[in-house]
Length: 184
Image 1 (cartoon, rainbow, N blue to C red):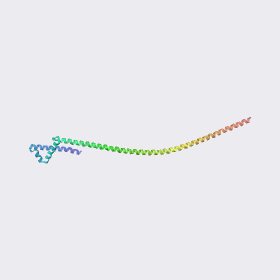
Image 2 (image 1 turned 90 degrees about the vertical axis):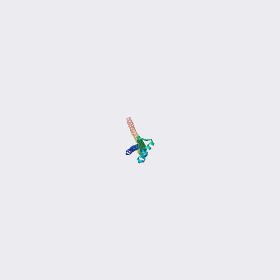
Image 3 (image 1 turned 135 degrees about the horizontal axis):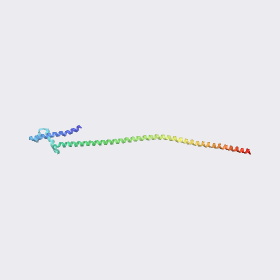
Image 4 (image 1 turned 30 degrees about the vertical axis):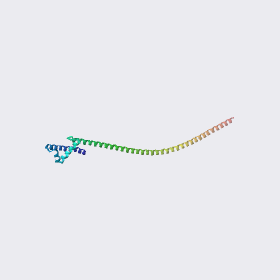
């Protein structure tokens, strides 16, 4: 903020020197010396006269000239501030755009890594599942084989049982037949 105060003081100092210059010129004219004498008397008076003429050429004269210059300075300063704000906003926008792009790249890279890791896990699980399915298939084949053997054993037992059951009836029939024959 010291920079701003310096600019605000500059018009005030310029205004004071103008007022002093105008006061001196009025006194000289009253004394009858005129403006020609003021140009010769001192360099500060000559400079102030040149400043007055310059201001008249620019369309600024009188006590409002310092006010006009202060307003112009304020307008310029306000314009500079607006331009600084706009530049700052453009920089912020560029920063956010770069941040967004960088974040997109990082998220994309992370997603690819995650996807690769996921596929590695899938492959690992697929191997385990494949091994278990292979074991299951082998066990089911063994069970099927055992089931076939069990059916054969059952069929054999059934045949043996039938043979055992048929033979006693035959012997009983023969004994009855013999017994009946013995009665006769």
